[in-house]
Amino acid sequence: MTARIVSPVAGKVVGLPGVPDPVFAEGMVGPGTAVDPDRGPGVAVAPISGVVQKLHPHAYVIVDAEGRGVLVHLGIDTVKLDGEGFQLLTEEGAHVAAGAEIVRWDAGAIEQGGRSPVVPVIALDAPADRVTVTGADYVHTADPLFTWE
Amino acid sequence: MAERQVKVTTDVGLHARPAAVFVQSAAQSSEDVTLAKFDPAAESQNRVNAKSILAVLGLDVRNGDEVIIASEDAEAVDRLAALVTEETS
Image (cartoon, rainbow over all chains, first blue to last red; front, side, top):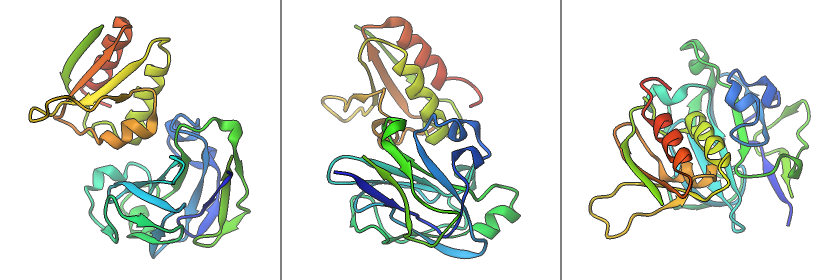
């Protein structure tokens, strides 16, 4: 069944080439897209219904009932912040619905700290031709972002 | 079967970017390649498919962890061991 992945944040859809990190930009982590988030405090949500397989302050993976994993990475090089400025709103192993609140953060503060707040949303282990980006120019939180056949 | 146990020295372990590089390198092998995070307390190690980014991210390998890389492809094992023991990632 086709999975409908929703945007974890509100912002401008910039696609993977819009990510200032070649490993994401070239699709090496996987196919998908990226959102340049609205600046300011916000909450990143689950892009798909499933289980929280991995939850870091700066990144999380939700796996759906069919084993499809979606990675949300909150900004680039943000692993080096060691969780500073991120508040976890759920825990690993939790069952969540698409749109459920996962991490509270502040894209503006990330940018002021000298890092890109761009959010790659990645279909893990997916062949590129199974992913179709449907999100338009601007998406609100939980708006459709891409489909995964 | 070639198998190596090495300590991960890359600064952020196997997070998104280094994990993607690791998985892509593993995928170049025509043989199965497995990765496990060494757990001295476990009777058998939880070996996952080193060609799956989902599986590798799920292991949550961090700097200082010991990992076990195994495959019939000894060259791949050496190549992957070198990737996680580089001084800079």
